[in-house]
Image 1 (cartoon, rainbow, N blue to C red):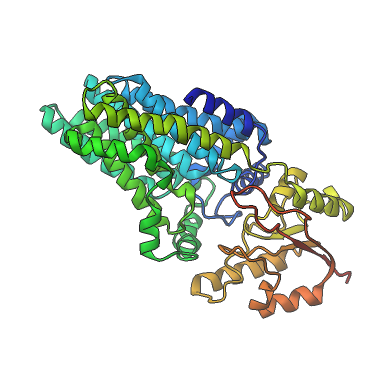
Image 2: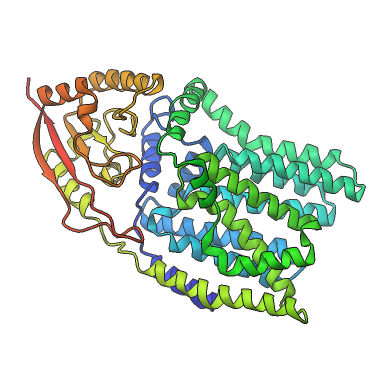
Length: 491
């Protein structure tokens, strides 16, 4: 049933388009390929490792939807391989069970979650743990270097990735002390491996003169972005628990308590990573499902280890294990495959309409002369497919139109205002997307009167479009994004 569910989900999602956050990062790579430097010319707050892996995926697998699906499938396959490697001494089926459930949970989240940064971070953390366990089991200090390397990559994806490396280094030290093994070779190899990707990112930024800009972005709009759209702490704490795994995790956690398996080092590693994943979810403070991926990955791994490890046990332990395995294989897996296949992935109406409008207004001649106002409403995805560079390097309008402005957002406004006047766009595409809200709103410009006056005096509203159908990229279809086209008046 696990294999059948996986095959059905893969076949049903293979033609998913590039939507959600992925088009934004694709567009950043496109701008980098056209000579723009992140943080310096491209004002966007993702970490350098994200751009590096995105660049590699696009250039090695192709710039379109097929390459991105291959990348996404490769990530979940790597997660499964790491789980199998960790559970091999118990039973390879434990890793396969955990990896299959994690893959199907990811697929059921829909096309907007493909290749997400937290998915990449989770996979890097799993691979790091696999090398860590191999190095300790076989007493191979060099494997600790590979553990450090992948933990370092996780830290270059999101700052919360640092937590995984720090916690796992402590657990490594404790285990080596327990085994009475020399600690220095392992710790030196771990730190050296961790430093490699971090230094590589640092050298890239120094080479392009963007280190100061990176620090400014992280301390400025990066921190400001984290403060927006935050649910209350109790809501985040409750939301951090991956309820989708309840059917398998309740029997597994019961066995964890009964067997006192938390005393084993391997279980302690998995439990620590689950807690770090929950902390990452809470720290990010947005409540998005994909922010749970690191937690879900290690919980699925723990479920597989406990359930498969006890499925041949006699008495109540065997019954509990079999119940958990059947719940995962006969309910969670097929239902996830059905949900994954149910999304309306064909909905590309926004992009099709905007492409037609921009083609009529000049097409390729708009290169460097068009500017989007959105967060992820498909305008930059349209520019990506049309191979058009934006007039400015400002990727979001999110911080420009907040009802309550801060020193950071006002500085962002000031810098954007200067960039807008340095290279006045011929065409402005204004969407009705408002950050972290479901309601559509074309009145955002009124929150910045100076900009609204500039828009009305310098540009002419030539069109307003609304796609005719709802967006089916989420479990509950959403109202489509609309856009307005403004064309610069002739002097």
